[in-house]
Amino acid sequence: MKFVSIVIGSKSDYDVMSECANTLEKFGVKYELIISSAHRSVERTKNYVKSAEQRGAAVFIAAAGMAAHLGGAIAAITTKPVIGVPMAASALNGMDALLSTVQMPSGMPVATVAIGKTGAINSAYLAMQILSVSDEALAVKLSEDRLKKAKQVESDSKEIEVLINGYKEGVQ
Image (cartoon, rainbow, N blue to C red):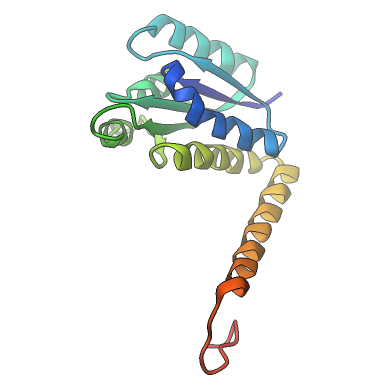
């Protein structure tokens, strides 16, 4: 069974990263979520990643703040895709974590999303897009979700739009 592994660097990351878990649940995607630190629990991180990979983890999501080395530490252990979510855990509001996560050496990629809640949700979507390469049912669910979002934009616009000279959608 394939699943997504969510690893958060500390308990304080849970409120934001629960959005990632909720998004995966909405699509019926299996996941695990644990706390493990690249700095404070090196062996735990290494052992968990190896175990998760053997048990079917197809994508890893790593959320960390400040120095934010968790994504890189996981990428050093596995060749599975790793998605980093920078957390706003310092006076720098996550910019330190963003730069730490995105600046990986050649050959050790960590796909990096936005800081905080938006990043948590987008990490789930990116993980599902990766899984959908070999899961047609998930690909269909993602396509349906995109259509629903597009229709919501149209509906929202109709509530407030003001148009001049009869704009018609699709006309150039």
